[in-house]
Image (cartoon, rainbow, N blue to C red; front, top):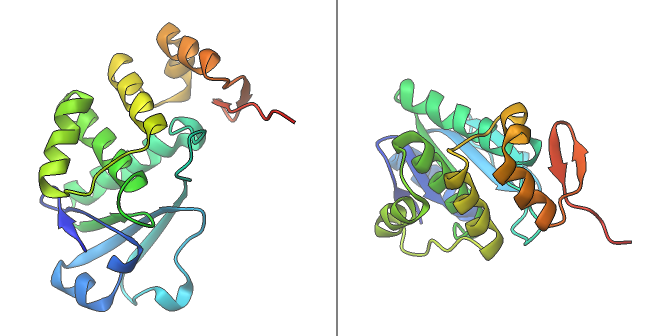
Amino acid sequence: MINKILDCIFIGDIFSNDEINIEKFKIQTVLTLSSQPLALEKRIIGVNYQFIYMLDVENQNIFSSNILQKTFNLLQKCLENNQSILVHCESGISRSVTIIIAFLMKQNNWSYLNSFNFLKEKHSIAKPNNSFIKQLELFEKIGFITDPINLKKSEIFRDFVASNGYLFELNGFFEKKNNF
């Protein structure tokens, strides 16, 4: 099932990437948010496939590995070029929803709640996991900052990562401490 969120932005699940949907919605780019990219045999010729490693688990940090900045750049580019993009994860419930909510927040200067409600009207199964909700609320509090330098300058962000166990810094971002 694919749902249209904005003129060029669509959301779906792993089964949305089929020739019928791609043709029907004129999808030019597919963004996969998962533990692995779509298999080559599932890709459709002429479609630009992008992949971001992202898990639907409580300790997935959406600020790490530049996830937000990479996805925002891709979504913005598609909007500017009037190219349709399908954003999907496994079920179309949490990861893809989280990324599109964050994009709506930044793009429109909307709160988490306004962005969630907007998306939920168009995609009724939207339900980010609790950790993603907390991080989206943090994203709102810090003024939609995504770059590592300004994130590290934010006292609110530093307090959040410290209180949630994100102690080690990797590539400019704080990563979850492993408890081995």
